[in-house]
Image (cartoon, rainbow, N blue to C red):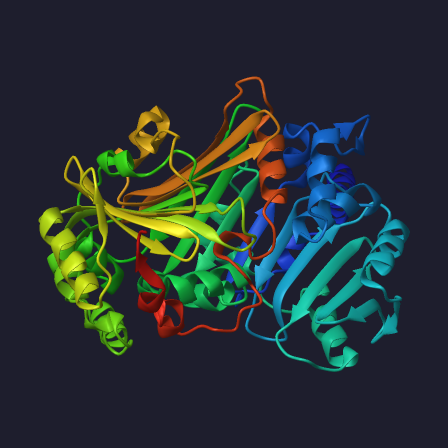
Length: 508
């Protein structure tokens, strides 16, 4: 009898635990191409957004939201206090190639509150479909089952009944769960991190393809596809947050003999922070890729790009292959929003070359052949391009080209010690900075080797709450902000530079 009583108590405890957690992770199907777990409570706690058990928006964050209320993140944060979430449970985001491309799962404390907020935001009404409480607006199905919220974005247009049946199957846990994959389980159960992610290699491009930022990036910087279309098995990421800083650890799971490993081992060169001597410290974004130029231009992907480049009228005549072959180390790009013209960008290119003076001479000879003689001032070759001046020169062996619409008076990124240290140690990396009132936010992410990457977000004020400042920084990013006008449907390489030579004129 005592044994039965103990078993009964144990069963009740397990049942209560199951009910409180909703077993959301078990709803993620085994064939998901990616999954992210989000410790909502930890993020809110570290950002100082919990007051007496309730979600509150600090005034500084509310201001950032008000300044960019079209951002999906800003919309989410704005609605958060009224969503009725059970913040003690983790939320999950996963990707599939079936009915839904993307699915969000979250536990609710007040389902009625969630219904009201979502209906108001989406402009629809919940109704019973296939026995499920649903609202289908645009490409999104919102479904509430007990105290579980599902938001699914369909892969293609369909009737609400079909979408509801797919959601019902997920909520009922009718499929084998991805949590049965030991690797995925280990990633998602990292309790030290507020956010954990596992992305299947072959599904990476499918996931990225749904991102407007990635599509724009791949159009303007097509070299990124060399890395997003490789044969990696998976990518894992964990993000730890606290008031002092935010740290990201990424692992690329691939075989030593994989195409990915061969590609990077044969192509990547030695990193160096010296290239920052030509990059103004005001650049919003700085990308770097350290390569061995001679091997780089032999890649079939680069040969294809060179072939495309050669078909461009006028400018395609320049011997770009021989120029790229001289790169020996970091090829770095700095980008900053043009403060005078919306949608325009100032840009600086800088690289370590085995023959920088020879490259400058080739560019000058090409421009002269097109009737575009430069002004030469203090060793720089100066041209005019629309509202910008193009300056080409060499500093301490670093070849650079600046396209700025102002006379540079600020210093260089090389003088920023943390940034210089970062670029000295990463072969592929990005640095970004934002300005919120008197607090600057800095983010860097790079590969220490071909399988391991680290990222770090920190602020200019040691007393500032880093997690809150990260949210403020993310809220300040406008749609399509990182790479220009998102509405442009002109995606060909030739469209980016065709006719540019006609606008390149000598300084008067």
